[in-house]
Image (tube, rainbow, N blue to C red; front, side, top):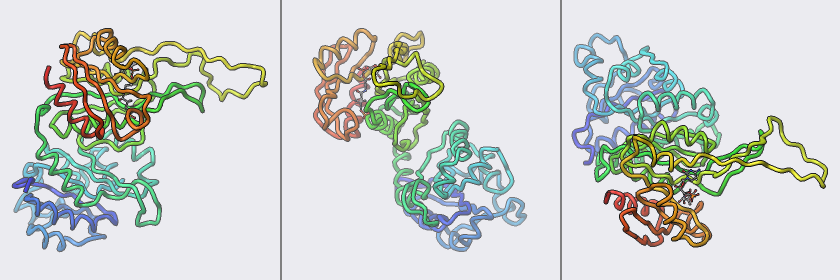
Length: 400
Ligand code: PMT
């Protein structure tokens, strides 16, 4: 009963996934929540108010200007009543209307009038999900509300397409909300900024320099910090991973983009972790057009210039985060190079991993690291999943 007594306002919009919301309402009630359902006009085309009324024991709201319903609990009271507004399924249309700040039906009006946190489970055709307009709305809504994004899942869709856009399963949504509700721990209320993944340095419009980082280590840390109650900003290079629940993700491409994002988000935070594999150099003689193959005796020489050292900049900042943690990816003399970086970059901790091994480090699900602290502490952490390791590392960083 981890959602015991929580007032959850479940907003259902018009997509085929609306049938899953009946199961979701049931799951939320089983977890102890009080559930009030609002259906949009589109949702009513897929599922009836009576279904939800039977499941929740509460009259379902559908209209903004419904005199009888407003006498019971007006829409502003409804907005105040909610501890959480859960939009599931959230169609592309609903996301667009929310981003535009519309109040053209009961659901959008209540969202606009409420201070309650938002959780959003999008559901739509994969092409609609991938559309730039939808992605732009998602980004803008993230900035506006910092909602908990729940999915979407990938797979076969009702329309026969395959791809991202399926509504997350009701059980998984309830589990995530329960996890959020019980999030607590050493990082409760702390501000944490994490970089993850590789950077890409353009050579010409079709080529770039990069490395093997998958982002898994940084994402595991972000997920765990959020689970422990932190407010997490994840500055991510191009990776193929879903955003962890409750994490604000800032997408970047190059090292210089990542440096600008770190400059914006890292100052005065509680913890900064540089898990990204940042390219040390960018190409100076980039070309605006695709570089054509030359005669075979003509070498193509790329001229490289050094990128800013992001973590060093963060650690030297006048509003330095309380704790600054670097990673060291080494293939030889792991300990010596890691200790050198700890001192040279003015870090509090460095996490050294041996990237010459293929079963740990880059792109694997596991990692095995040695951590060195400015305070002289050394900790050898055994091989384990990156998720388990993230938890062990965050426990260590509280020792500052
Ligand atoms: O992403 P995965 O596939 O899960 O793999 C995880 C990982 C191996 C990428 C990760 O655990 C790791 O070791 N990340 C750091 C890789 C790296 O670039 O190490 P480095 O020794 O080059 O850099 C040392 C530190 O300085 C790092 O914290 C790095 O983020 C930071 N750095 C480096 C260069 C630069 N220009 N700016 C930086 O901030």
